[in-house]
Image (cartoon, rainbow, N blue to C red):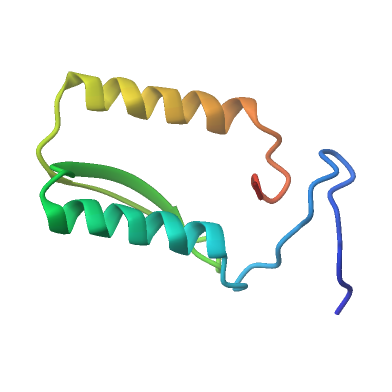
Length: 88
């Protein structure tokens, strides 16, 4: 396997599917701690699996501003190079 493969479009390192992502793990642990402390009251998510399967769900409480935040996420997804995802 070749190390340090970068995208010819963005120049970012390409992380192969199925490779553990420390940044993703840290964010999920941060959210889990916030849920355990009662600070996080609800969540909406979309997920991508190594097989390119996707999933989504909404848990807990949500408001119209939650919907607005999702639109911000959609904007970022649509305005970012889609060449294997943002790796940073």
